[in-house]
Image (cartoon, rainbow over all chains, first blue to last red; front, side):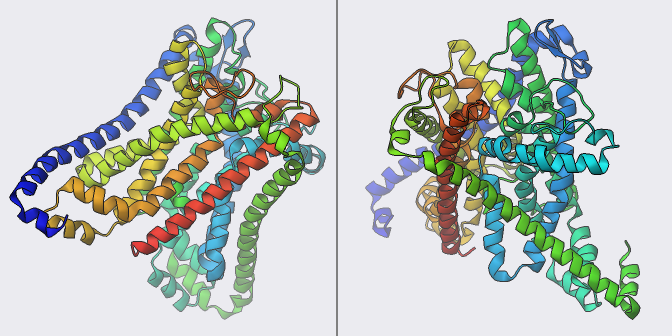
Length: 329
Length: 295
């Protein structure tokens, strides 16, 4: 695009022509791509509902509360898996949320400047480990450790509580919850860290000037300022936890029952689909799993929308709460 | 937690010892939390590598899997299959993702741009197993058989929001002055985009592409549904179901045999090395690109 080209009338005319085509072409192509992204989202919901239709028309909303999954009698219900999803994700977040906040405090307030980037990168790398590998590690390393050490200890200390009753087992809700803790911690951390970094320095300095210790400054300035962002981050972690299929399927044991003990085997919606879809028998096997998928999709979409709304209402619009890979940087 | 209350307390000298103690406890536990996260990474990676490295050999890398239960084979068909499935997914998702990003940053009115971004975030939040069900209904049911191509489509859907969101972030970092300079010279918008904006952002765009590849290379859930029953030997035709490394790890991990577990660890070492190296390279690109754009 040298200046000479513009002064030459012939070249100029040709350029005008390509520009007349080029501009609308790029606009059209890119607009089409953007429309495709929206269409895919709608198509996913439609197709899953379509596959689930035989089960929806057979079981109706009663599917959600039916506590049974029996291919022989063709009686299917989502209750054991909704229970498993809720219990494992809740426990995972009970661990991951404080852990992530503590890591973010370390990374933004405590760590020496030289260590901040490397440590943050290492925490992010935890999110890069494929879930199937975490599941393999869960089966062969974490599971036996839970069975031999952690669960007997919990049982002897808190065995009177129903959640710590029964025999220790390598597979079950608790093992799955710990794997989910490992998966969600880096995601929550990357968002909370970013939120903490937006806290204005003069507010922090004002707190120090009043004689606050570092923790008092964090408690009185950083945490209140970041509240919406923290809640949004934790809910995004929840979205990740409820949707994880493979690692959970590997370590939860795959039992279609509700059991109070966290040592007991169970299953989640995502894990049940991953484990059963391939060999699902009969006219209702796959549709019932798709119905389960539809409920899971509704959970996931609601969780994501709520997380975004919370953060936006917290007037932190400049903070991007989606843990896209870009933020892992 | 009114600030006045807290600050009044702070002036109370008698409390100083207790306050410093609390501060120390929090400092130590925050540091411990960060150490814990790093330790988990180190423990997982070292157990994968130490348990797997012994089984990695030329034979393992160049021989296809044996029949079910036969652990004398290798994973050459899985390596080839993963390369094909992920390669086709990348060819579909990266250009489309880039176009989406160009639309939202260069052309879209603010409200539509916002809506597209929102849709991408929701797409990113769709559990990957659901993407698997979608592609099963979309491609496997009509074709009546699984295929590597179905796997690629599923992985492309997972990649799309990652590529598009990263590219958006990088494109908004391109200094407005550069684009304005091009506009001032009377250069058309598409030329500015292709010749000025994209080359400036190239490093960051490559980062997004590499990270999305790293992310789906280990993706298992949708492949279990749409590409997990495959024939013997090294297959290269995407129209039929292909073996893949993640599915191999999953299937071997479910087996009770210790030999199968050893094979799973070995395949996991290769996958984890690939994913972590890709992450490191991607970060290096990003750091360089940010520097270039003065961000």
